[in-house]
Amino acid sequence: MTYPDDSTLPEALLETIADNGLECLPDLFRVLVNAAMLLERQRFLKAEPFERTPERVAHANGFKDKTLATRLGKITFAIPQVREGGFYPESLEKGLRSERALKLALAEMYVQGVATRRVAAITEQLCGLSVSASQVSQAAAQLDAVLEAWRTRPLGEFRYVYLDARYESVRIEGTIRDVAILLALGVDPQGKRALLGVSVALSEGEVHWRQFLQSLVSRGLCGVRLLISDDHAGLKAARKAVFGGVPWQRCQFHLQQNAQALLTKKEHKAPLAAALRAVFNAANRYEAEALLGKLVLAWRKSNPRLSAWLEENVPEALMVFSFPEAHQRLLRTTNGLERVNQEVRRRTRVCRHFPNEDSCRRLVSAVLMEISDEWETGKAYLMFED
Image (cartoon, rainbow, N blue to C red; front, top):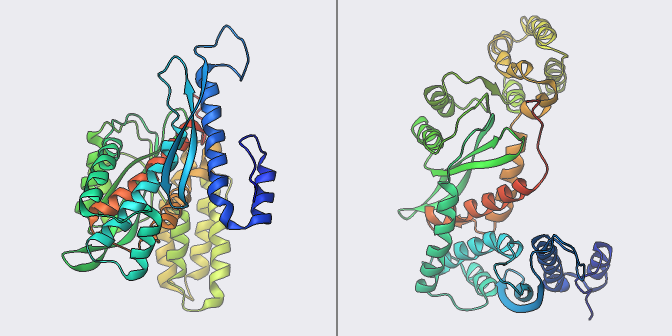
């Protein structure tokens, strides 16, 4: 079986998968990471291969092999070297950070006797060796130091902040419990997104949300012009206590789901959803309030409970009309943070039940740090006129 070299185009990589099946994935992963590291070295040198330019700051000096254990098995990467020193590619580290966290989570399950035979076999396969408690402890300490520094890093000005929570199963004092993962996403003055923080709490109660929000403020979070979240009671109380003067946009997607829960007939769900979308898609707040008034009247006789609920709650989802029109679509819901949660869930579902809170925090933090790093080097989420 042959594989493409580091210069192969993505089309050829896909053809290799089609021809050889998934067993070629380790070599394809090696090709992609090697290519990323090569591009990183070119940016560092400020010159293409064999190019002579006044801007060149150093010279390439071949490659050094490095073998690492990954979920795909042991892979040997070609680490680009620089003659003058001072260069080490970040591409490999970013790709393996969440990899190590996942392996540690599974390893802890194995060491503490929580896992089934199936999980133990997976651990052996992923780590490539038998795992001892001391090895897990040492590796965890190294990774935890990096993740703790990221979770407690100074923040600064973020104009829009999205808040949401999801749940993971964690063993606490011998019992499997669902713990809340509290998340905050911010958009800075340059329009770039960043994951501001994460907290593992026993619930979404006010005390946990308040501690989380206060920790963001203590790290320097400022300049917040709008908070976007669902209408959870604990979050609502904590938000008012910590960010009392900041406008709030209620997630329109969750509000629509809440409204449909008040219907007694299934066939009414589609018409109600369409009417609410018309309110949310109005040209301005005046038009939205007019459409809302008609909707409230339409349900007053057949479902007075729903009518009163709409009149009281829908205005909380119209704050977005007070912000630039170019931003409104991205401020109406917490869907951006929901996509982050989907990526976290994709990584954590392998573990099923975390053996402790530290293990859960470690893996979730590693995934979030990886996503946030990608956003930092990517394009702006939105643009501010000032």
